[in-house]
Image 1: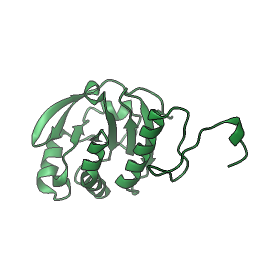
Image 2: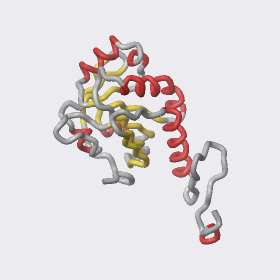
Image 3: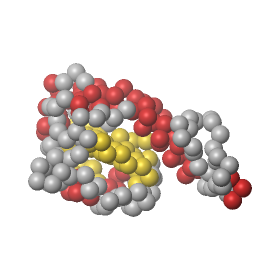
Image 4: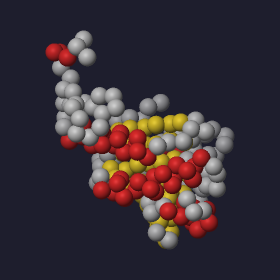
Length: 187
């Protein structure tokens, strides 16, 4: 089921960020762009490579007004232990949400039935809490932070320029399209 265009559901959870345990709610994510980056589990294999990639680009996300929330069904305690022991995860400055009660994973329809783990999914949420982009990959397919940045730039562009769309492989500064009857059959 597609969640594009739907508003994120309420949640409250414990998280790990900047050496501290904090409480995060859906209300905390409003007012800026947000990425909910679900991954199956701490202390695994593909997951740390993805999270390190995000950490390496976190400053760029921040400059674009985007906050990152990584989410797994592990606890905030597990996130801290992983952060303290893994060189890749130790780079993380963004918020690591614990979802041991599966509330957030169920809200985003990303929980693997009968397994208690989240699928590998990315959701980009606008400042009003509306899901604008989503991507779900299979267990062994890692995601790419640079491609995620490109997609967010496109989403932010069309949000700021109603009536325009970004064609395939669009990069910031390139030509967009204004859908109209005149374009039908000419692309």
